[in-house]
Image (cartoon, rainbow, N blue to C red):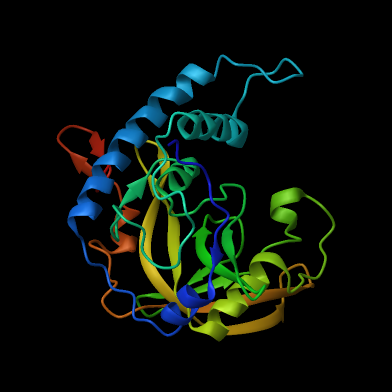
Amino acid sequence: MVPTRNKGFLSNNRQENQVGKKFVYEPTEEWFEDRQKIKKALNLYRQLLPALEVEKNPDGRKKTGFALQIRAIKVLEQSGKLVNTSKQVGHVSGVKVGDEFNWKGELSIVGLHHDIQKGIDTMRMINGDILALSIVDSGRYDNLIGNAPGKLTYCGEGENPNVNGRKPKDQKLVGGNLALKNSMHYKMPVRVIRKIESFDNGYKFVYDGLYNVTKCLVERGKFGKFVYKFSLERIDGEQPDLDLNKRNKVEKYGKGKQKCTRTLY
């Protein structure tokens, strides 16, 4: 059976079992099998991208950016190569804290962050409330890394002139913003992925582990409009293999040769 995307509804039983649960990274035999599937899927995805660039949109222009990545994801979905297709809270099988990915589309392929066009990925519970499953700190909003390790202030989504060039407006408590607030209420962890600089590809996305949403505030942003700001703290034991500040540095080898600090896939 070909795996397809599952929008994911958290049933009453699953909801009761997961609220307040301590999410622990515990590799199993299935986890290692999924990791091998992930490596194969990512290799295929990276081969597909240049091959699909020759395809054209209805207006005659070549596919680029998100359109190209979505097309490649669709090809993998149709061939049954996607991994972790059901949305879920907590870690996903086959991925560990500190893993790096080249494009946002790769986060969708492995099940870390399904919606490549939004910074907050969500899932609806059986009671109708939505939860935030993961966030991507891609630098488009004024997100801040706290002075203490493992802390992040994440700006809510929507009405960002930096993204759409429109006239700034107040953000609303809907969509991903509401989902993050609900995750705080239900004490459900959120996966955090950060975009960092990288020599070989310009940037990479790093899985930074599970965080708890500890605070939700509404403040005026730099454009004078109300912005939601969420404080997140890394769950104990979720420290990544390498410090993110060190990851942003490019190491030099030999005569002018440069190499990214770490690449897993």
